[in-house]
Image (cartoon, rainbow, N blue to C red; front, side, top):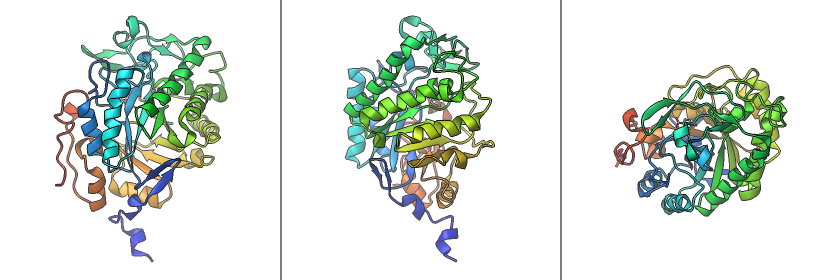
Length: 367
Ligand code: PHB
């Protein structure tokens, strides 16, 4: 028996290169998107953000934090956008710094839907959603944590402009120097709200059957892929998370169908959050292999993976890529630490969301 094949301390498999669509990744370590609430006024990325991402550039792929595609897409304070010229210029600093260090970075395209508050919305209006159902959830605004606001349902006539916002955001991401984009369709935000029957009670072509509830994600994905190339487009899904007060009566049937439809677009990758998002890994019964079956692109898994779990998942063929979230906050050189089986710094939760360089760009490397 091959010694290597059973040695969980051997990280060779994590450091095998892989072609993901049009992206050539030197290893299987991905930095998951992490909300850090440190954009400057106008939700513009800044030099501090560029330093933070550049410090982590030896990952196979960086997925930049969730970024609103339009003003209505914002749900928390100081999250960056990709809809203004100033934001595009700000992101150019980030992508330039990452590329200078030899890295690759894609942008996560975000619309929060109902997970927002009137104080964050243009003219203090209600957030938009598939249906006017308020989430039992909180968000963070200038005054601190507050209950999210009751949304209004998007009209059918508004859907083309929404899809156009995603396409324009992808074009803006390309202009900002990103290597691609990830469409955020997970964690109870707008596209996930359309997918699930607890939040989508529409009677038009975008609600009702599983196929109809999947329509918006499919049309958004096709528009984005048409803009920047399917080989530069990924989608993030979280079939069983309840984050953002979301649920579905038939998650397996729903997400099997979603992946089957997305498979026809030849996307670069799908990014799957197993179990609940954030914090501890809490897997729930779900047949991820069945969901994966029709998909030919790269398969990225996320949810509390550590080094040995990542190695095992790659060896078992359960994944092509592993996305690490929280460990990347406190370990700018996480990729090297995984390679060398070095210990990890512990992150300080008090500085996860908002603040300055402290707890952001000042975590120590091995050197
Ligand atoms: C958050 O800001 O808490 C957040 C953002 C995006 C996610 C999950 C959580 O996908």
